[in-house]
Image 1 (cartoon, rainbow, N blue to C red):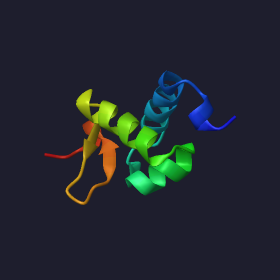
Image 2 (spheres, rainbow, N blue to C red):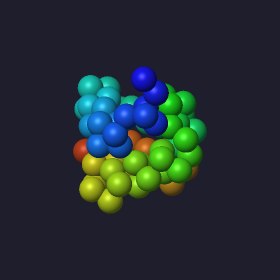
Image 3 (cartoon, rainbow, N blue to C red):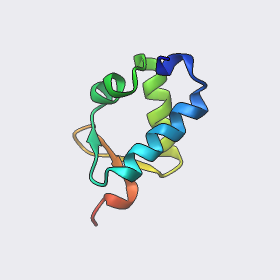
Length: 72
């Protein structure tokens, strides 16, 4: 089943698990779209929600990393 057909909450949990299971994972929005089979709008919404929740951090170059992996 494609990610777009799954409830967004399920995809959100999957994304969180993948970042937790792969410390140092760093994805551009385009890479995230391909990895999770999302359209651009759904991917932007999901990544934005995870940034708002302080789970992800967006780097200066636009990639996403898990917030606790960001070094001060």
